[in-house]
Length: 433
Image 1 (cartoon, one colour):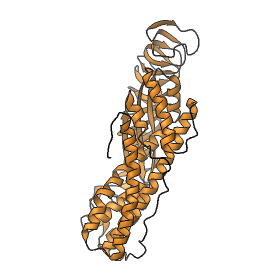
Image 2 (image 1 turned 45 degrees about the vertical axis):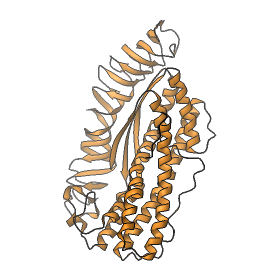
Image 3 (image 1 turned 180 degrees about the vertical axis):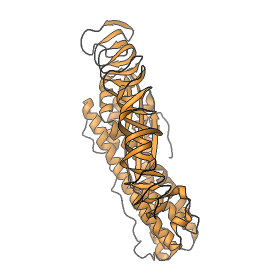
Image 4 (image 1 turned 90 degrees about the horizontal axis):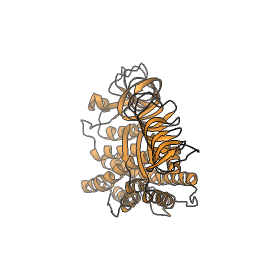
């Protein structure tokens, strides 16, 4: 389980960040490493090569899949904005969106988006791979792992933390807590907010000291000019005063309607997505830190009986090849499911606000997948691959397989690197990743 927050703020950085997933058009389909059939996986060195080859293939496949995610989400937002939706690659589709965002920013709009995402790795993939690495070293995973870092399927009482989609949780939840009881939410609140001040969106508007975008009637000042609030959406710029409906910004009065996409300084009832642990008595989509009688997912930190399919999230205290274990981590990262939400605040462009908000979950999921893949791809390509080659004890078949695997890793690295460079280039900068 990896829970992260990603934040980008007003100005050209919004366009830059939305460009993060861009990759060159016409990207070829991911390839499997070739020439690996002759490996002797009973030999420790060749098993490490096989683990690396599998990780390379799966990470490359995942990188191509993420490009598809971005193509879909950018075209969906473009459709809501009335923009071109004919582009069939991430670079083209997200490029159209970037141009629309840049146009809004140049016209004086301000934008703040906070993406809170939760990515859950497939523990069974890591456990299977790590089990093979451990068997080659004649290592007992449970006996060789620090208890707090040992995970697996627990058929009895889990005394640590439970990671699973929508697990019932009475304890600390990191991710998204959905509950009917009010909680203090340190992240993004979706539902109701009883605070006397808030920052986000209230469908019922704001009655006092409001500043932001108003899709209802604005009473007060609209971009510095007095307005009496007549006509729906009478202020297309920044409203200062009160707003009758669809208020997005900051407010010094309680939201009496549905609250979304923002920070609630009081109690939130509904969904709270956060990268910090919050008290939760409901459903936790993330990591629930409690002592559940039963964990329908991955238990970490203690099980009253022997784990099924155990894996170690830290370093095994035995003679397991570190490069083999690193490749297992890569395989796990390639098999993640990401979700979450984004806190969207836009002033001066109600249409852009509505379009970005409508696809909040998809944007957060794509960001989570992109960022979680990047680190693993570069680690395996730049560090692990070279270390395996330098080992000198791999077979001739292993040498052939490594050459093919490193080529596949190069393709995955180039795809992610182009994405990072596309993001930075919006501000006239470039990055090598």
